[in-house]
Amino acid sequence: MSSSPEPLPEEAAKTSVPRRSIIGWPAAVCVIALALVGLGGFVFKTCQHEPAKIVEAVSKAIQPQITVNTIIQTSLDRLRDESKLVVYTADIAVMVTKYSEKKVVYGKLDLGTTTVRVRAAGNKAQIIVPLKTLAAGDFRYNETDRRLIVTVPAPRVDEELVEVQTDPDYYEVQTDVGWARLNKFSGDFLRDQARRDLRPAVILEASQPRILDLAKKSAQEKIAALLEASLKSIEPNATVTVRFKE
Image 1 (cartoon, rainbow, N blue to C red):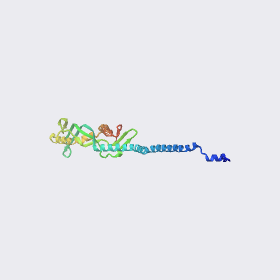
Image 2 (image 1 turned 90 degrees about the vertical axis):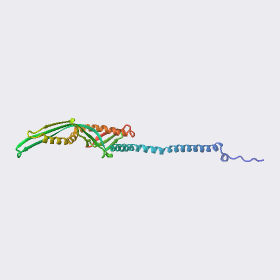
Image 3 (image 1 turned 90 degrees about the horizontal axis):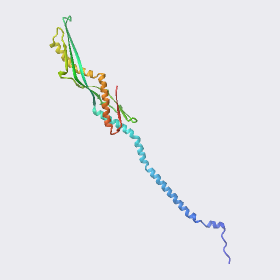
Image 4 (image 1 turned 45 degrees about the horizontal axis):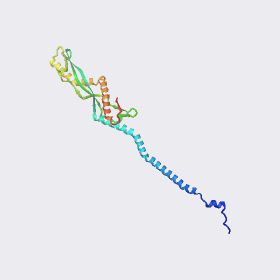
């Protein structure tokens, strides 16, 4: 009885497949698939937050400008509401002097000169800062210092708010009548003129630099306090510097 020939070593290698190789490939594919799923999840999770980050970045970029515009507009509206702000009330004392001379006989005979001096104390003049013409260009906000700089018109006397004293107790009247004149005529006439000139004299005195300097200091304090109060809700640490136009 003859036996079948044994397969050659090369043929045996071709027909036999190791068991370990058959099991290893599916496992490797699974590992790679899991890795891809994990990577995809990470990428998705990362990208998921990008829109929020972009919005946040844009918001931070434009927020300072929004704040600046809001501060300026709020300040502008607040001051315009005042129209004109009374920053100082001056107590004014003035003296008005009037003269009257009279000559007759073609100017050859001098009847004398009557002089009247009226001094009035207790007059009031209000110094204002007009705010109606303010524009956004009059405001500048320094974000680094958190300081709002506002440039306003210089203080001036409000001629509509001048109070001339009417109480006789506040008046001093001195009359020197010319040697040939009558107090009833020249004296009364000049006293009436002096009283009419009290108002312009009060305005002129209240417009002197020494009084306007006091008004400027008061204006800076009042306007700064007014604006800082309205800015608290926008920028609690903001300060205000007030300057005056030439």
